[in-house]
Length: 243
Ligand code: C2E
Ligand code: MG
Ligand code: MG
Image (cartoon, rainbow, N blue to C red):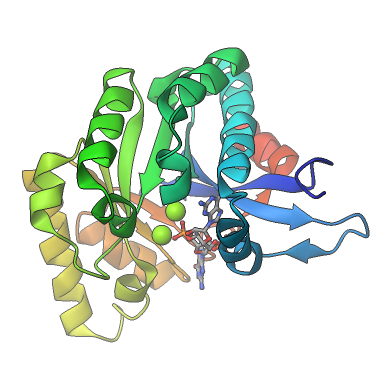
């Protein structure tokens, strides 16, 4: 019912460079119910996966992001928008064709759309995942590896898959102001990313000091409550156009 009545909304969280300029944003799903209450994705995404509804959510999120992308580009403010991809969705037989169709219908440029994938998404069926991501990359989409620094963080995958961007997981970022080892991990990840020509985004940046440290360590873009919280589409659009 929530899907049919448009209650699943894309909110956007800015990703800023050293100078605080909004370069990109991540679309994050929110279930905004009729009474105005908001359900977080941590609650409804696992349920949607279990019920086999996650692909429809993924398509709606992509459509909303693609529409905003076209609007921003049309206003002379091309900002890269990222959507999170689930394993179920990527394994739909018509995933590639539908993705291309949704972005085309919105009038968006795939080069301004990032698809965020996690390692677990790729591990299940590596061959299919790699082929599909390659095809989308060839159509211009940017592919990002999400939550890097947790799980296996396989270096072989960084080489084989068509990534343009690496997102350092919040758990690695949170404590770098106090923890030298965490700083060293960030430094090492940035070095690896450079080797592979990947843009580095840090997520979970909760304060200024952490942001400055990350910039000094060579991280390209910062995302976190310390920069801006995820916000409704209209609010993000106004912020992006004002800057
Ligand atoms: P993610 O893709 O790693 O997204 C980042 C999460 O970190 C978001 O939580 C964001 O609100 C949160 N975050 C950002 N900055 C900070 C910070 O400074 N401190 C803290 N403590 N948290 C911060 P959110 O929106 O609750 O999303 C959680 C996860 O749900 C996402 O993790 C993603 O895996 C999943 N998700 C969200 N939207 C979608 C979607 O449209 N499709 C799919 N498949 N998964 C989604
Ligand atoms: Mg993400
Ligand atoms: Mg993440």
